[in-house]
Length: 130
Image 1: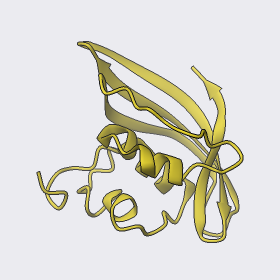
Image 2 (image 1 turned 90 degrees about the vertical axis):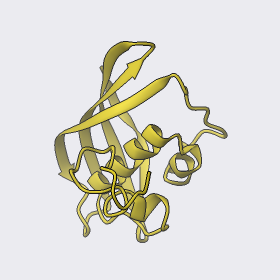
Image 3 (image 1 turned 30 degrees about the vertical axis):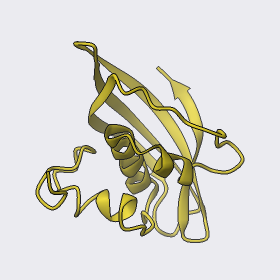
Image 4 (image 1 turned 45 degrees about the vertical axis):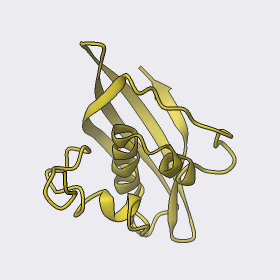
């Protein structure tokens, strides 16, 4: 499938190429913490561990990352955003990520912290998990 025609997994309603693909594939920086959160969800949905590591703050980034291929991430719902705009240096995004695994549906709710270093937003850590 062509990224110019299929819908982005982050649930923005845009095509992959017009949404998260420009960050994941083209290498441009997401302008906000929300845009980074959406692109990271899309990286989980498409199995792109290298993008996840690249966008993880070096102080909290694991040495390696193995994604569970049996877990299919299917929808992202953004529940709230605090700061994280183009002129901020910190931001918080609350979301629920929905998945399917072995025929069962589930979800993960999280509130994540982000920081911007130079032009690049980075994932720092999760404040809460539910």
